Image (tube, rainbow, N blue to C red; front, top):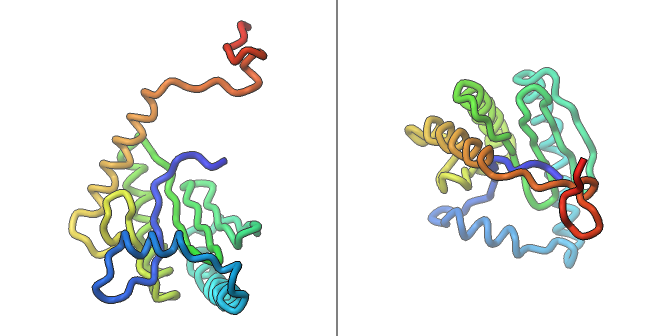
Length: 176
């Protein structure tokens, strides 16, 4: 299971449509019922992926490509950025960072990657946390950095839940 992350969704947004409506429509679509739609979406992802991967490698030379059951995933081990290319969705995830400088650098990298994806696919990047476009919004980078840092600080204050290996049969933490 992946840790909680700052998410950027890429959506086909009709003129005048609201981001929330597009996200809800994406969740309601089920490509399993129409094989033609599923095949077309897979072809789009596959065709765009190689152009996106090539551009990403220029930005992040150490990216790792992984096949998944849903599509393809691109991971940059140094920044923690994860790009999921799936049949129904393209999602860019950023790790939460407490260090403001590192959060700013990672968010700036994500914006460069988002621009590549927008250019290659025609989809628009949407910042679900700030509820606004991810690119081209004055002050968006700084608001994103502040949100990432504040979230990381809040997560650091949450008590850690023991793993199942640390629990005895009653659900209580085992003494060591």
